[in-house]
Image 1 (cartoon, rainbow, N blue to C red):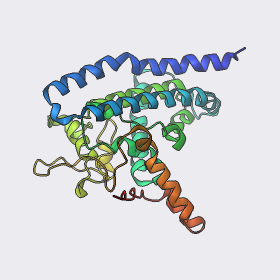
Image 2: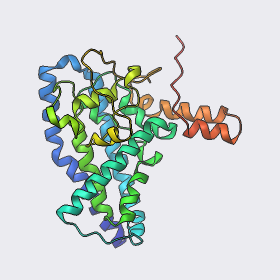
Image 3: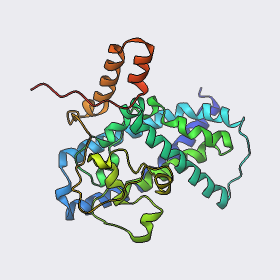
Image 4: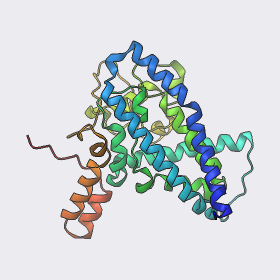
Length: 287
């Protein structure tokens, strides 16, 4: 017989997952409209792979939520405050989570361990709405969820925290496009498509810039902001060799490369650097 707490956690996980499923038709509509008008930004095989990666990511996230909610619930009992849900606390929770997302995203580009998962999202040479679906199933393993624990320890309920995370990620779908151009005064406060085009670029002047989730102010505060420039032709993708464009390679090539470097490294310091230093490029494939 299932334990009551396990059943409760399953329903809480379902509520978070349901949020993403509910707005999925809007995502698909945006992809269809963009493809109809700007199909030069698409490659069908690339978008199909993006969809497969999204489904595997959703599955791994659902399993992780089911396993993590008991831990998060246990930690929540030691929280500093008992935060009630009001419009003000919701706003504070959203801003704080976006602040933590900035540091998670920045870590993904500066620490090999996190990059081994995040590289999946950057591995396409196309940028369109379907690119937002291009996510790794390894995020729970590398520990994306660790960045949300401060909110739980502060006093926000685990269910609310994971819902806020889902809303933040849903917003980010709409910045994965080249078609909207600059959005006036919104560019000063929010992450926009032009800001995110810069983030996905592999041009030297754009590397490791614009880590924002929703609010671009974090990049401006912490020195990682780069404006979109019309005179620079953006090249999308990653530096160095790209993985083979199929499901297994895209998910695991960088992970295998990182572990290989760790095995080859000399001493504890060398192995630590291989795992948690700045990311290393994939080696060039032999002809």
